[in-house]
Image 1 (cartoon, rainbow, N blue to C red):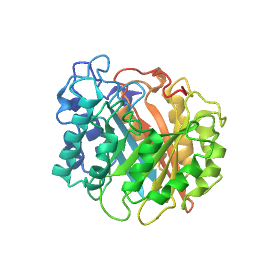
Image 2 (image 1 turned 60 degrees about the vertical axis):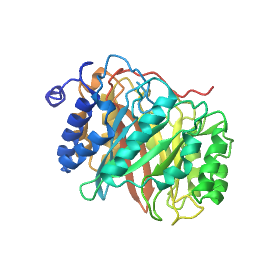
Image 3 (image 1 turned 90 degrees about the vertical axis):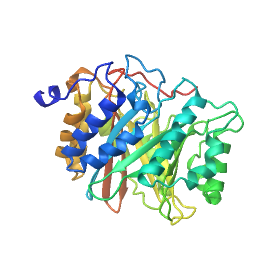
Image 4 (image 1 turned 90 degrees about the horizontal axis):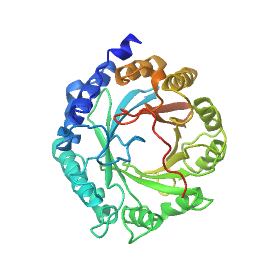
Length: 368
């Protein structure tokens, strides 16, 4: 407990930059990564809105975390090493989508200017996901991946329901077409075999990078689907190895039922190299409503990592640098865990909320 209490508390008078940069520095130092480079990335991602005070409640309820926090840290563990990630939604000057679009585009320009992120593919679909007429919902979320070697990598998450001029399905299909993946729509439709009402498209992901391995991702929220059912469906991808998702989900949540307080999420990933067939599929398991506290989730994640031969100690060390309270005193830190298997080599990612506004966040994204 002493290591948890040593992490500074965040007051409502602190700024998002205060929280983001200091937390990133602790995590990067714990993982043996380049602290200077990583915090420079954070400063760009939080500029200029990071200078605002956090406050006691969100002025713009972000889609990043269940409690409305606009910053999320995560860590991916594999046999190849650990990767740290951060996801942000640039806060708008006014609480409306048009203002959110302006903030998101400014952040994109900053990543292109400061780190050489590639924006050409995003420019090809910007009018779809950031429409001028009556935009709705969130505008764009930005993620950065940081590894022990090499430079940062960036991606964006776009809103298929950005305006009333097109449905989410139509907007996603048109975006795939513009990016050269028109024939990939057959795989998307097959994957959402129960219909897009139950297998709802929720995000469109795009790497801010060029090249044949740059990824396009379609994310789904699955209502009333069991992990075993999704496991079977994911065999549509080139890399998926079926048979482990049911047990993975049961061990993390205590249930493998299709009926759950938060629907499962998954994605299909396409690249030019892979062609019309998804190169991978990933399952995201929501965690925060499946237990009374983050202490139980920590124990479950640590056990699963250990059995996969992944660094449970590294996960726990990072968690201690992130948690600002005893893990037994809330259930909002662990938001999701994701997993994919390739040639018998697992990759598990845990996602963490800063709990800037609520350590017991409610359910989100209920059907209807």
